Amino acid sequence: MKTTWKLLLPILAMLTLAACSGNVPQHTALPGSTLSTEASLPTGTSGSDRIAPQDLLVIDVFKVPDLSKEVRVDDNGNITLALIGTVRAQGLSASQLEKQIAARLEKDYMHNPQVNVMVRESTASRVTVSGAVNRPGVYPLAGDTTVTQAIALAEGLSRLAVKDKVTVFRNGKPYTVALEDVSLGKVADPMVMAGDKIQVHTSATKEAVADYGGVGGLLSPFGLFR
Image 1 (cartoon, rainbow, N blue to C red):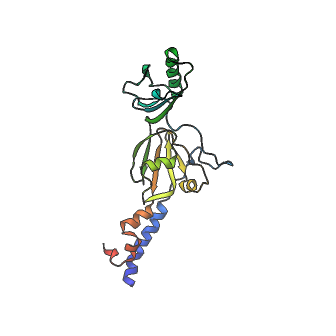
Image 2: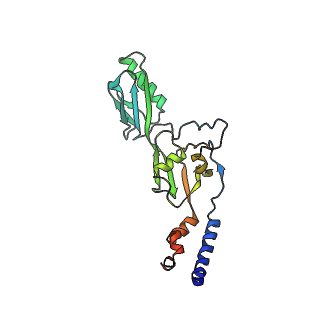
Image 3: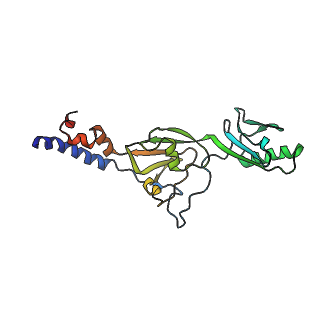
């Protein structure tokens, strides 16, 4: 038994050092993530407000179902609609495209058409999620997306993640988001913006335990010699 504890002591010391060295760096809180008296979520859009090639749009013309459809912007930046044909969409905001479609319809076909355009998939607006997630990668933003929703796109946190904090890099500046506080409703879940990079930190303690086969492996005499 004395021999076993002699072997365990260096490992336990290593885990203690790993816990100390695994502290997450502290940064400024991400705008919109602090607690307000009304606990209101931040407003605004996550991605660019300009339509780009390959964006998927939802066009809705009030009381005209035949003109309401999903349409993808082609590589030349155009969409094609019934009655009015080709419409230039690239570089316009959704509201600008609404006005352009309405003007074309009003010119020859109907009085005061009510047109609504929504960007369902924005290929130009992407967020990078890396670190201790199950599927790191670059993901498109479809409308307003929060930090936790962006992490969900990467199939959630891995078992090695530090769950209380992540770092969001925006325009080169790091911000801290306290995921634990978000999940408890203590702070708002902030919106991500196009170009954000989300880094989920890895726990050095969890890594060390995993390397030695878990706590059970550490305490087992056989686990010591794996």
